[in-house]
Length: 512
Image 1 (cartoon, rainbow, N blue to C red):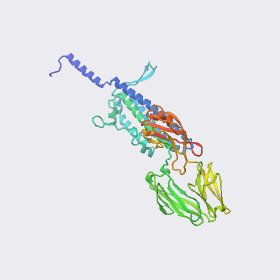
Image 2 (cartoon, rainbow, N blue to C red):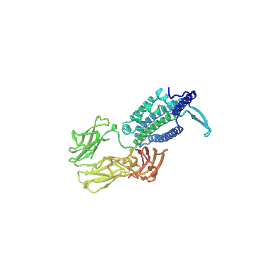
Image 3 (cartoon, helix red, strand yellow):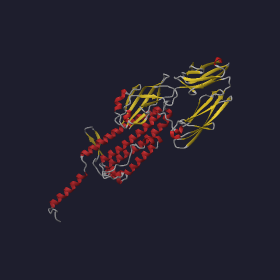
Image 4 (cartoon, helix red, strand yellow):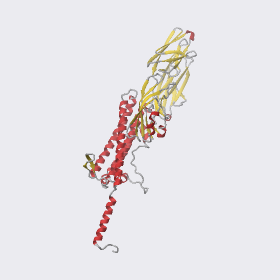
């Protein structure tokens, strides 16, 4: 054939050239190998740092189980966090086993390194067949994809709120990127077909990093829920209040009823004493003029949708007493309880005239507040207090509960925890303790708190302290916050109008 060399030696040279060309095509350059080794080492370091951050959260969750103010919620969320830990550990160990199988397929042996005076792993880093045999021929690629997909489903199924929060941003994703030709290859072809051993190990470390980040996101969320004040609708109850449980004939009884954990989607309907009442903000109010001395009842019926969309009906009975014209009555202007540290306004009525009425109190102090029957009650200790009204020689005593003001919640900017934009969070100057849904004008100040920074841009968990609500002292840490950073408040101490320093649960923030 024309053009072919006739000299046997030339033929041999051409064959050797073809063989050399094939070898060069299969070899991977040292620069590429070293690049993969650097990336893999970086991923392993990141995995260790995230593990340390997660361990800090697990330790905090364990402590919150023993703290009275957080134990009830910790019993709900600590098991969910531990479930996330087990799921993550299982799939992480599975990938470690795949790494061991891959190294064995790439002729792993141990050799002595004189620089570090110890044995190190030695394997064929540029081998292109080991990953192909393990993940394609032996089917480990499909098995890995199935395990990762199952892990994602199980993590999101831990709690409905976790699924709602993280379904669209969950770090573990097995969908390969579109190739340069615009085609979608399958999982194994994309990540492990004819891939150097060191590159396949790096890809496995990358999946482990995704798993560690997913674990951190879910556990941080569980930790933050212990400090949250929202009540799950599956524990909802009917809240019923009344302006007084003792009235005189002709006075008005006002009954307010609603859903204890209100959501705009719960659409409650409220019936009181057989009459439908208008509902605003989850509550309805029923007013009636009382008559007839003695004990009376009002029946309250509340129907609403729970968080699963099912209709739930709850009933409750309100009891009140109508006194005789010669008696007296005590009515709380806000609620049927006295709170420590704030002035509690009370209205006392008398049917015999104030010239024949004397009012006294046990368990607190009573002072006139301008106007007939208007008083201010102040109490100092939890328990009971009583007001005695002596009208025309007839004494009536009324017992009331005494409570501490509820715990406030910690807020930074507009948020009390959960996912927050990093640019908004890092530019805040203050944290504050805020009371929500409390009728009295009471203010809390932050005394001190410990803040843990972890995740993105923090190689290790970094603690910081604040004294007061100012964040000026931690501006250095705040400036490093980027999407993927986790910020957890712990050991938060606040002081309210009663002057007592109390510890409250702290929120956790996931920045995006």
